[in-house]
Figure 1: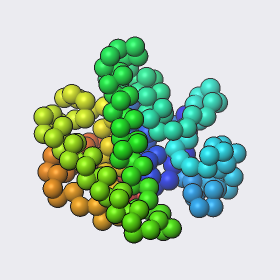
Figure 2: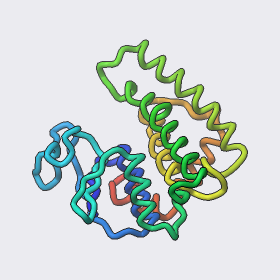
Figure 3: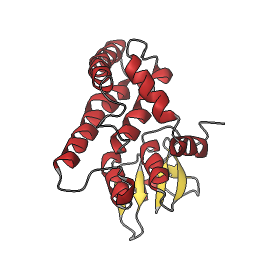
Figure 4: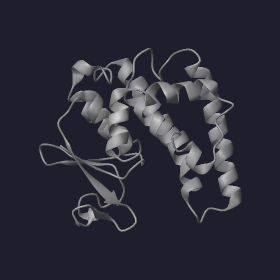
Length: 202
């Protein structure tokens, strides 16, 4: 398998899961502005959408969209329990969390990275994030991870997008359980390994 990534982007989530699952893989860095890979290939020939992550499977199929990729990866190593079994109600609960993180957290960070976004748009995005983090702080006050007592694919995704807070001046000081979650997930060996590989940790 081969993961196309950009350091610190949402592609860090499947990168973490690859290490958590212990799956053999290659990676290739993508310049998202130039739309080129480290080997000089036009990234749009791999993913016409032009953004990461993209995962080339062993069968040669290219998967895109982080929430789909992390489930695929977790299913390749079911013994690691990174996602509940397909068809179980617990699986759908994790899918629900992945969708919440994607639409309510990830997408509200997008305007904060966009230099063309107005101050009003950025203010609205930060207000939306505050509401979502208030909810997450309550949930994480009841357990160590997003879904139950064990680490799952949803935790990797939440960790990655919340890690952007410092870059765009989103204050998390009012959410001690979210901060504790970030520290807890950030200390995992697989997370540390992915961060180092992407040059985000020395």
